[in-house]
Image (cartoon, rainbow, N blue to C red; front, side):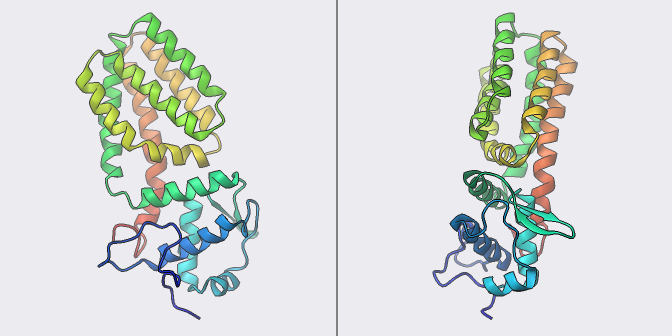
Length: 258
């Protein structure tokens, strides 16, 4: 069996390349090889993967490396491990599968994401609280219209764009252009994480709708403290969901960032 190394072409199947003086993680190589099988359609949505020993042999990987790759892709929402039944490619549409893999791999290597998530947690609730003291009826009506539009969105990219616009409209209601610039910069840097979540979280529409309605209700009541609390719950829940999945992969031996 060939050892766990990048394929003959020297690539990693879409995994971001390390610097020339870094060792290529064997788990990243394993992810790349699985990714190519999914991308080619050989492992289609709903497909059950071969048993671990057989698949490790096919992919010329060690079983521990394959096991870690499967765990990472399960965290990404691309594979589903069913105890006693096997491991399956999820029923996401093919284009969503590939977007989910790409987003997850990018995020796992993005060491700045943690800081951006923290910045969002600091900035957005405070901006929402300030907006509660300044927002007008017309702006509130516009926010409600945007929330209702989001209920019908099917495309994850469109959902994330509407979500970004919803929060940008709230910050704009503060009338503070410096705050708008700060929040916009942070929000744009966390957009990929939100996109990945929209791709793979099955109840994201219902969850997003309810939390946006909570924020809107507090703004409508001009309740600054309530607006801060509602925005904090919303931002914290997104951060927790993303962190739980990425941290499990980053903490593995040879994971991104090591």
